[in-house]
Image 1 (cartoon, rainbow, N blue to C red):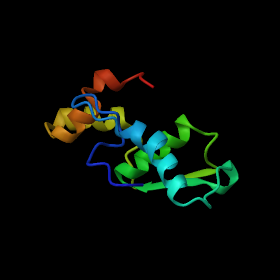
Image 2 (image 1 turned 30 degrees about the vertical axis):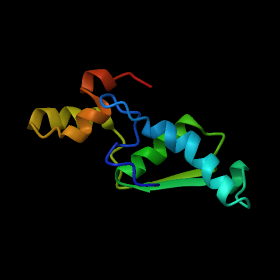
Image 3 (image 1 turned 180 degrees about the vertical axis):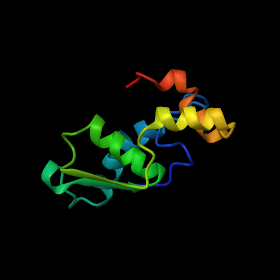
Image 4 (image 1 turned 180 degrees about the horizontal axis):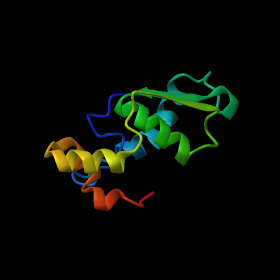
Length: 111
C-alpha cells in the first residue's frame, strides 16, 4: 500500500481528499501504464498492507473482489466503528481519524 497521508485509505469525511478513489482507480491505471507487464487477471493480483494500510487493503478487497485473489491485513484495525467509539470514550480521537471518518455515528451501518 502506498503512503496515503494518515487518511485511513478513505475518501475523507472532512477535507475533501479522495484517497480511496485515488488508490483503487487512479493508481492501478498509472502503475499498469508505467509497468506494462503487470497482469490484470484476478488470479495474479493480491493486496496487502500494514496498520492503516491493512485496513485499506481489506476495504479494497471487499469493495472490488473481482480484482484480487487474496488480501493480507497486518496489524490493521478492521472494526473501525468499535475503534472510533473506544477513542471517543477515551477522549483520544485524533484529528486524522475525525478527518477520515467523522463521528462513529456516521460510520455505523455505512458502506
